[in-house]
Amino acid sequence: MSFQSQDSALSGLDNSDVNVTKEKVVYDGFFKMQEYHFTHKLFNGEWSETVRREIFERGHAVAVLPYDPIQEEFVLIEQFRFGAMATSQTPWLVEVIAGMIDKDQTPDEVCKREAKEEAGIELECLTKVLSYLSSPGGTTERLHIYLAKVDSTTAQGIHGLASESEDIRVLRVPEAQAIKWLHDGTIDNAAAIIALQWFMLNKSKLIEDWLE
Image (tube, rainbow, N blue to C red; front, side, top):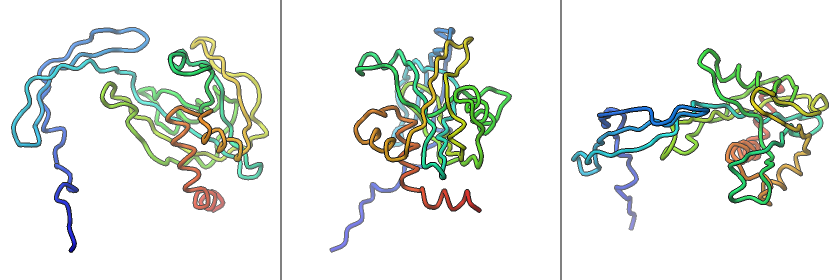
């Protein structure tokens, strides 16, 4: 007997099914916190009671994973992240290059800017792979993930902007080592995990596209 669940269809609800009744800034410093009051359509067709949420407004960002198909190496970075101290043995994390999108710049431009600022490298064959919401229950941030071709032999040294208190160490990481770090938890931040997993699933097609 065949059976098809009716619950597999999406609800079809969208932004027009939300009514924002009030918003105000509750904190405006290095980041911004905004308070929203709203109602939204329920799955049964009725409307919710008024909901209040504080939302972390930090803008949107890019993350780019540079790969050298000749050396079979990634260019990764290591830097201090205070927020990791609560759950990690070390707050110095292995990450991909990343940065916030300014109002006057495209995501592609930010990738190239951050690659220069954080690793001193030039990107080729910049390839957009996906975007995701980092934590939509508490922030509006959307992160755009890219892969790029690079000459990893040009990657070395300590980088970052003093004005942003950055102290970034560049790493040339063999492909096998990066995958090992992914499996053993050395790499444990979302953007790096997603970028590396996407690379593992799509490597052949990606390299083929770059060669073309």
